[in-house]
Every structure is written in structure tokens, then in C-alpha cells.
Image (cartoon, rainbow, N blue to C red; front, side):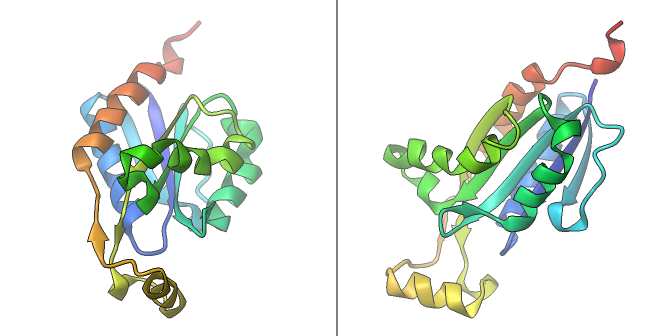
Length: 168
């Protein structure tokens, strides 16, 4: 099977949790998976495919995830899936809006697949300015993380990620 690097960027830990769920699902499909934070600038060398995701803050991907995509674009182009984690995805009627938050990243590398996952808001895990913002827009603590939906996406990814080492 394929060697896959899952790269994530998170502020409060939810996107790291999603990356872990993705890695477990991909391993269950027989892939060899490594998970790394974009902030550590993991090298893409030696991997067949990439799954890159970011939490969404103020309708944007985190800067280090965008920087990682830009820095490694030549190596990962044509072999990358993208995801984001945001509260907007919790409402089915806002799915397309949440998925569109991947647009900037998809402009860097054309994705093989894209997804959005509902996240969680835990006030004690975010910066004081984000707590202030969330209070101003009257957002209560919430948890919409759906591990089953995340795991289902790994089947889609596994179908799209073929083993390049067996090609002539």
C-alpha cells in the first residue's frame, strides 16, 4: 500500500485529533501513515500521498499550513487531499460554505479530494481574544466532532491513493 503523510495545523487540538482519526482509518485500509504538525515543517520526501488540513480561524486556514503547502508544492502536487475543521461544518445547510474554506489551499495544490469536518469549541483551550470573539457572537462551548464521518472519508482517500511503488 501507499506511504501517506498527514500534515495538520491546529490551535486548540481538534485538528490534531482529526489527523489522528484519519491516520487510524488509513492504516486500517493498509496504508503506512505518518502524522506531523505543519509547524514542524515535515519533509515530504519518501511519501506517496499527502493529507493536509487546518483548523479554520476567521474563515482562513492557519498560516503554517498554507506555508507548508507553498513550500512543498512541487513535490506534493497531484498527490494531495485537503481538509479543514470548523464549526460552520456542523450545519448541513452550510456544508458548501465550510468546504469553500479550502479554496486558498486548493489554489496552491489541486486536491485529489477535499473535505470539511465539524469541530469543537472549548473556551479553556483557545486564546483570550478568541474567547472574547466567541462571547461577542454568543457562541457557547460545543462539540460536533464526528469520528465516524472522518473514518468514512478514509475509504474515499484509500480508493484515490494507489500504491505508486508497484507502477512500472
